[in-house]
Length: 288
Ligand SMILES: Nc1ncnc2c1ncn2[C@@H]1O[C@H](COP(=O)(O)OP(=O)(O)OP(=O)(O)O)[C@@H](O)[C@H]1O
Ligand SMILES: [Mg+2]
Image 1: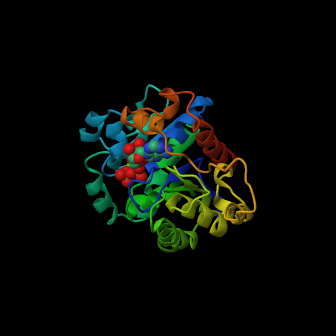
Image 2: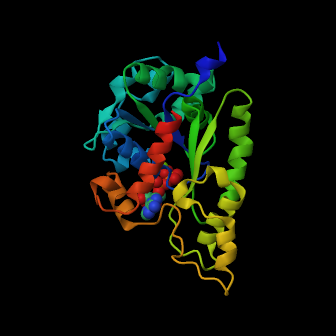
């Protein structure tokens, strides 16, 4: 097996070993932006709870007999599992049996490359352009499989105490061990659900400021702020105009769209955050 054989398949996993940070929302909206450009895009829901699958209205698929395990472990054609959504993305749904699939994986040889070998590779060979994976919120075989399948990850963080700590833990416990064996690129660490302005001290500013200071190269353009600007914001003698509004902002259009099973572009095409999802899609395209 040559090293070149292990270069990432086109796509990205959206992952953090924590819940409620916007993994599913961001995965859905990146997939939507890629599909809008005419790319055949597959969105894989690897979360055992199947939030994305049920949110998109596919409760039946979540409860059906056929599931990801058939392709992942038994080698059946993954294309049979795909559902075409009304917004043009092909969904590979989660299933209520994924917990069991994860348990079965533990007894498999080469368990960490199953998703890559039996699902993502065949889909790419069949002509799909990008695979976006909504990774499980906890550490486990499926979450490792997500990162190894595409070898690229986008990590969302929200303004909450301990966010950066969670990022450091994920790098230390999951990303670093995988990197000992194969390449794994962090495409972006994106602040999400940012609401407050940056001229006051609060969790929103703390997250954006610390990310820029400690993880600068991974911060996408829409969230980049020069550390000197933060110093200037605290200096009564200086005026910063306009006050920057970094990150993926908290928008009711985003959450309402998600509740209705839609990417934000299909719900409110004027939402000012769509360019940020487009930017993440650009990064995926450039690095795939
Ligand atoms: N930028 C945003 N603006 C407004 N609402 C958002 C934004 N990002 C995410 N949300 C909302 O926050 C909630 C949590 O997001 P989401 O379900 O995508 O997170 P998750 O990390 O996938 O969570 P889980 O671990 O439970 O699967 C959802 O209701 C979603 O619509
Ligand atoms: Mg989710």
